[in-house]
Length: 73
Image 1: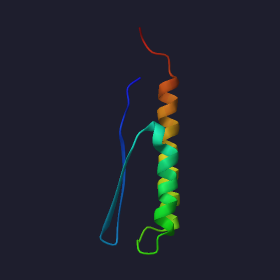
Image 2: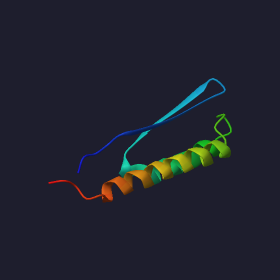
Image 3: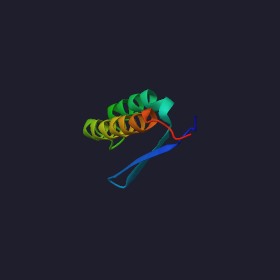
Image 4: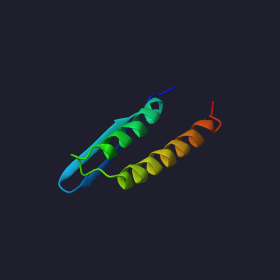
């Protein structure tokens, strides 16, 4: 199975948040969103965490669907 690196980014209030992750690190990425949202020194909000989490989950669902398709021999 080929390992793919995914990128998701947010630019807000002059700050750039760029996250690189693979299919096996989705849960860790979602936890990181929560840590950033709870850090008052960052402009990253709980709303940002929710939006990015939803996007990551949708991308994972789409990737899982493609992975489950039969492969041509």
